[in-house]
Image (cartoon, rainbow, N blue to C red; front, side, top):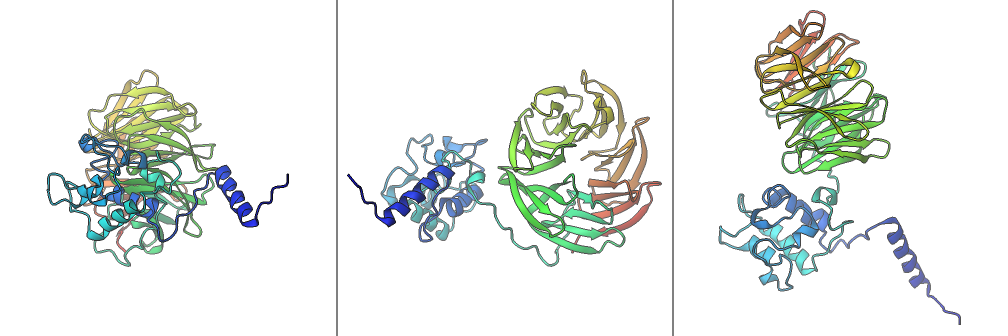
Length: 449
């Protein structure tokens, strides 16, 4: 028996098979409310702080479409009735009873925002992502950030900085952008846009052609943006999470990036595929800094949980945990030969310790809180809350140079060996360039376009 199949039916069948094989989700009509683009961002912005994986008020979570559908302690299914007026989620958004109205700790949603939720529910509360269990940060498409202000009303804290490979430029984090400065005179060379609200970490690719920028919005979103430096274009967005990226480290001899986040994790990403290779969850609080050994076999991490740790690079297995800091640890570096580590934090001390046995061998005072460490040949640089940049000589663990002149906490620093220059950036936006030979001030400006 011959079965005749119409051409339109055959076309639909082929498309359906393609969607199934390739894992595509058919686009929702423009007239239908999109969970990915309209509902999920509302939940992330207004609800996640109280109803997320770390804090679930009333036993209710909204951090994925799957959890959104599950009842909290009340036992009432949030999306369980077609009657809009009796729908529990809508009722909580609309009620005038402050003890029940959501969001509970901020202003109520606007009528327009509630209208979007109402329309989505009336249309069947459809999901247009890939997996119901995916967290919101995976469901929401990467955003195009707003253009930065032409001129800043106030400078922003300098939480990240790196020299360009040739040392002629200094790149600092701005507000929704990176600012590229001429080291010789402090003028703005260009502005790289479409970045997170705040950039906390920068790392060059091994080729010096691409720049990884890690940042985000605290408690809402963290991510890494991969930038083609020549064009200034963002070519990829990855390492997305529910909290900001605090540090980045490029693995020597391998196209891999370590990403430290305020969600207490370290994730290792293969930059060839932009895919996560390993998740390391050995810390109990923010991971504030990461550093590779010179041979790329070990990874060091610092955390707000008052510990510093060493992991084996391939497996992620814990090798050593150093408990010698009495406060949050904010900077770390594995020294040459991969036998010792230096770490610094809120206890005002740079501590040097052996990986084997995790025992302290020396320390150097830096006055107040120390931040992210930058290593040079035979020394490390430590920015400090005492408003200075410290150069610690590793041959004798002494505070060899103290570069003063900032009027606020020094949060970040950079070193360019070829031009013999250091740079430091402070809480109030001051940038200073120092001569590495004698620590003399060369140039200074405020990072305020």
